[in-house]
Length: 230
Image 1 (cartoon, rainbow, N blue to C red):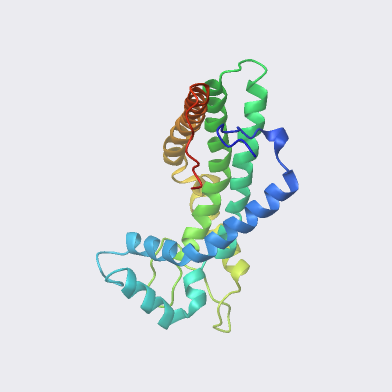
Image 2 (cartoon, one colour; image 1 turned 90 degrees about the vertical axis):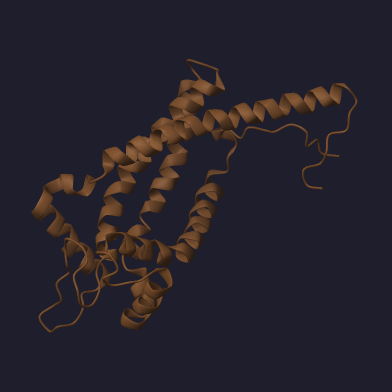
């Protein structure tokens, strides 16, 4: 019978890299597809002046559907999917940094603290520019202008294809703010995510170690450890 009393810490060398990256991206994409419309609605509600366009989440959902159809709820989605890269880079950076720090310290706290902070630094450096572009695309709608920039239609009056809109937004950001325009809010993101990640991982390993010690103590005393699956 398999011993389930101890929590095994999965290190980088234990992972099946092919399955990890394929299934990780696939699962994240499924979640992203389901929640993206509400991310778009939240962004528009935060940006609008008072209740000039929408009176709430449900009202925004109905009005966007009526004006633009289902595709209106997914404006900027194709660009936003590139943030999936940052998720994989986060885990890769975390695991490789832990392995590197292990040459200098065997403390799980030290390894997790440094690796967690480094992983967030890399991930946010990739995520912020993509978020800036995708959020400007979220603001595109028929009628009243919502954001700083507005995608221009082609001379025939038809809309611009998805990546045509992206190129147009990128050009406008560069023209208005230069490269710094893609990193608006970057420092705030770092100050939010780096401490969170740097603290979360040490607590995770601390909890795993405490649980393993507790289970081993019960085992030595002859007590039966409850099965978490029961």
